[in-house]
Image (cartoon, rainbow, N blue to C red):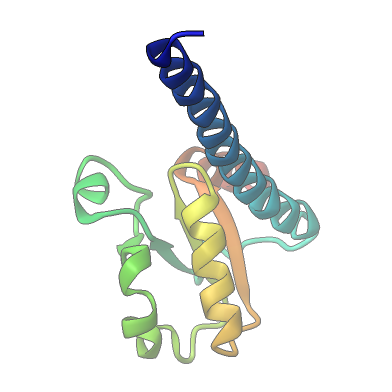
Length: 132
């Protein structure tokens, strides 16, 4: 086999492994946050009093967000822990549920037990309609 064919084959194998590992980590992350949400199905969101936090970027937030939500991007949640103090119920959401799953974990590790992963804006709106 020529040298160039070996390099090409090696690159294809490496690419396949890298892509597989990336997609598995995303799938695993999404399914973990999905499992958390499935366990929370019994827990109703008090939409009138919940502290609803969009953990997406400011740009994503500006493009549209759940009415009444505030924006605390995931990478700043730890720096803003004091803003969660005294909240009876905290609902975090993002675009897919992965970042909000991470935010939920950060908050729980900081001692908050009243955190719900709302997944995304569409899911929150559906839940609110069901509870009416």
